[in-house]
Length: 327
Image 1 (cartoon, rainbow, N blue to C red):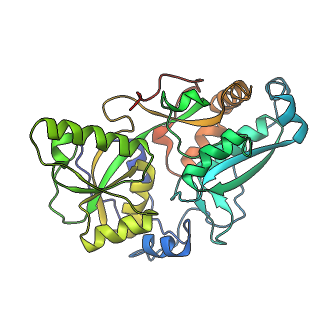
Image 2 (cartoon, one colour):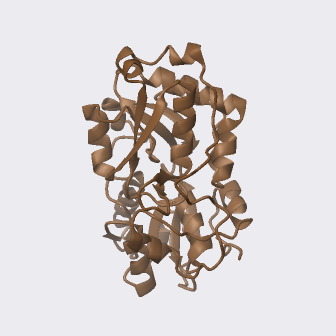
């Protein structure tokens, strides 16, 4: 069952092409209701491993990189990693036991922990609590589709590991045309997660539209992706803007939506996804070195391809690159 043909002028072709080659079925999500919503229309067995026993791609410990880990974390023997509990496939989501967090974010975090010779200890939490938990030291790092921004760099350090793209979804046959700029969403009702760079894009676009005399956006906020998709099906919203990998996955699984536009996570500028750790705690150098090691060794690409997101791969990790501008 091929992905309905998207029509944006810019997109993440490798992500969509990889997903188009798969027939996917979602059997678990962040919660049972979300899983049920996303699975509508899916009847074939998923080629993805959705069980708690992941058999992830693994890497060998590298003593000289492990030596970069701060003493406090090294003494614990663990890398405590936060993931968003509201995540959706294939990024970070619950396995079919509704307890174990799996997905590409967990696979990359596992590789980093391996290189650092630490036990990978994942934990899911709400999006807002993710940042507070890193700030408090509860989590050593977060791998959760976090985009680098200048504002976030005030409190956190970042080591990049994926390119950030986001996509607009509409219901199949909605009649909404190509979306690749502010004017294309004027007057529409668009759902987005609060506190994300997707929201920032829409707020900037809405400001530009109103300055140009166009109709304002009607922004809608819901608790999780199942709510967004229910709103799309019922016609309460026109579009949903979210991460491209999750959007492409949902299009393929549910066969009820289509991608009508894909843009950079920064809107008009390049955006990058990164591992996030507390500012100046000394861990970011180890994270970057570990990521570079698995990128060079091929384990990183293998992990991304395992979840069909190889199109968002980077060729090297970078510490605290230019982030999205302050709002």
